[in-house]
Amino acid sequence: MSGQDLTRYLLDAAEENPVLELEEQAGPLARIPRRLDQRRYDSYDPLLQVRGAESTLEQLLIAQIRVMTIPEELENTAVYLAGCVNDDGYLTVELAEVQAALEQPMSKIAAGLELLQSLDPAGVGARNLQECLLLQIRRDSSAALYAERMVEAGLEALVPFHPGRTGSRLGMTSREAQVAYDYITRLDPKPCRSIGCTERPHYIIPDAIVGLRNGEAHFSLHVSGNPRVSMNEACIRWIREAAPDEIWAHRAAEARAIIRSVHLRRRTLVRVLGGRDGRAKGLFGQRPIRVKTA
Image (cartoon, rainbow, N blue to C red; front, side):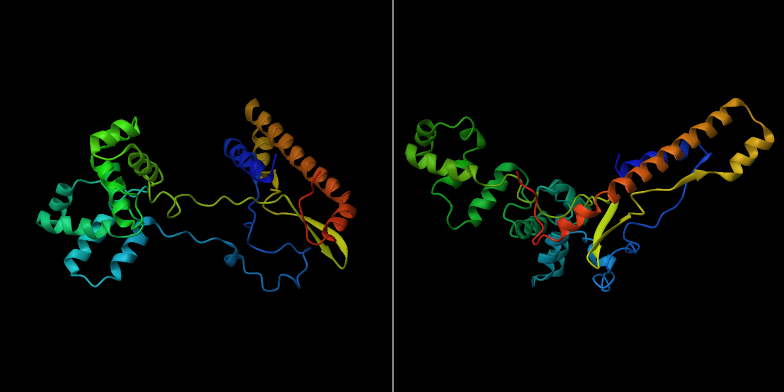
């Protein structure tokens, strides 16, 4: 069980068993382990090691709108519409709803949508897949001939696709239909899915840290990967003095068993790391450090 899994288990156990007490630890970035070479880490700033959150799609769209020289009313309409776009880039509201919310003529709402759909990436602000593909085609100067006509004819012309029948119906050769179809399949039906950060990054906290100091391998157990547990003294004193029902004696025994297991895990980890000091020195002596291959 990793240190992170152990900490989660102990938090759950301490919540269910008041006899067990989990000591608070400093965060994984709170300080540098003392055994690491301080000369190497004098300029270490933990805040610089944390990846900042990426801008959201809405923020990126609004940033493009703000640098434009346009009337304020049009800017506000486009900004409002940018907030109604989902993570894939599609508009999630009807224009009638926007008109009711902003109390503006439909012509101004349509102008705001046109501005939104002119932003990057191509296809943003579309109300359906067909419009999304058309926005991308019309923005692409190297778009395949007849690709726009094929999409305008409806997606039923693409699924199932037969170059001969489709070409005959739309007034093009089967070869032209095939080229247009191949181009359309390379367009992105979700043009904004890779923009922005929707999840927080997951950091892996090591159970131990190994390094070299004066040519010797040293190790230290990472604080956050090796939680410390103890018995709640107030609970133990109350159990001894008040002699409550048997369930409390069972909880005390359960807490002792968990503490013994944690101590055993810690001793085993120290013993394993201690036996690898020599191997660690040889590993760190290799430059560059590389993954061992068969």
